[in-house]
Amino acid sequence: MFKKASFISLLLLFSAVFVFFSCSGYEKILKSDDYNLKYAKAFEYYNEEEYLRSGNIFDQIAPVFRGTKKADSVYFFQAMSYFKQANYEIAGHYFQLFTQTYGNSPFVEEAAFNEAYCYYLSSPRPELDQTNTYQALDAMRLYLVRYPNSKRLGECEKYITELREKLIQKSYLGAKTYFNLEDYKAALTALKSSLADYPETQYREEILYMIVKSSYMLAYHSIASKQPERFQDSIDDYYSFIAEYPDSKFSKDATRLYDNASQYLKTRNIESIKD
Figure 1 (cartoon, rainbow, N blue to C red):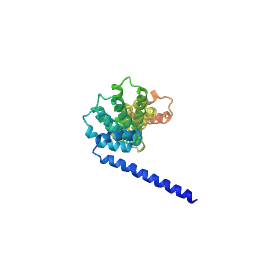
Figure 2 (cartoon, rainbow, N blue to C red; figure 1 turned 30 degrees about the vertical axis):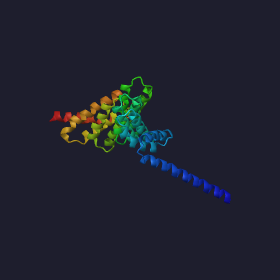
Figure 3 (cartoon, helix red, strand yellow; figure 1 turned 135 degrees about the vertical axis):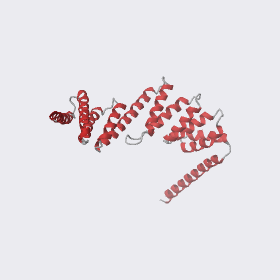
Figure 4 (tube, helix red, strand yellow; figure 1 turned 90 degrees about the vertical axis):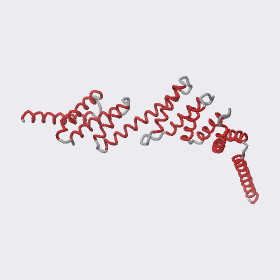
């Protein structure tokens, strides 16, 4: 038991000493003025998958090597170090700067793809702000324009489809929020805008139905002078819906709203004749 405990203690001591000297060597490199050594060690750390250390050293030496033959490799692997740490927003920014600065570098195509891929990986769920989604779409499309024969063509198209579906869902959820809150005027604007932006949306049937109901409810709650025109609008929206989806699961309720709107206009016309 004693020998086993002593062995474990000795092992821990050696581990601590190794870590100390490893850290000590890294700290010395950070403080060194030998930039060629730093350049070599940065790549050594990168190849050993110690990306935090390689990134820190690349950050130090990047300004020094700017304008030299080694600049593109330093800046590219600086970006890659952040990418490997899953720090996608910073990596994407560095890849973007790289493609703008080193257009003739052998790394430029990979940098252009990685920029787009970083934005793709940073794209949040549909309910949140979609700035990174738009950035990813723009960068993916630009990549395909620049490299139409890329081996990543299928991969990029897959990502573009995913990103666009996310924007479609974002648009649908935003419009449906107004509908659920019974803000029918805002819902109408948002629902029609969603259809205009994404006519191929998988939510098209439901959106057209929500337009019918929003149009009807807006008319129902309007002042008397605006009701005739708005009820007529709801009837027109119904025709658009039922022509496209005659067997919709929403058709029964949509038809009920249509009948109510038609009855209102018929009654009002009869009253107008009497007057």
